Image (cartoon, rainbow, N blue to C red; front, side, top):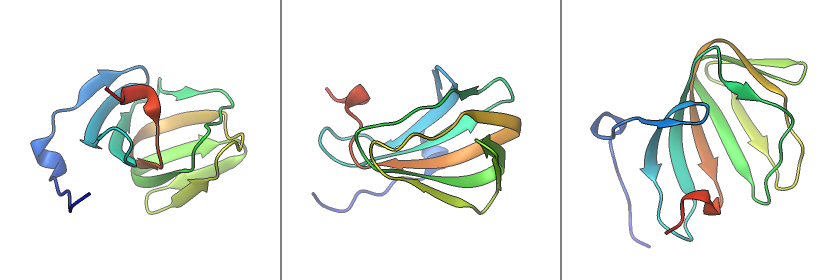
Length: 106
């Protein structure tokens, strides 16, 4: 895999189940990088995944369980670790890195 670079301004936001998403790097078998754009209606219950993932709060804030994470916070969730529920009291923009999420593989 060579270097992959993309400016988020060049990527259209797609409507997804919890708001909008800009898919920055989505190659089958590679780590996946996206920007999640969540409104106050976004969020979900307790969740886990069979891969490591990281959220970096770019704007706004999210509540995860009893903790509130504001812009500038990096959150790492090891694989198979329950996290949540997630609430979005203010709109938020989240950078998400997932080691390998097969939901968008071709």
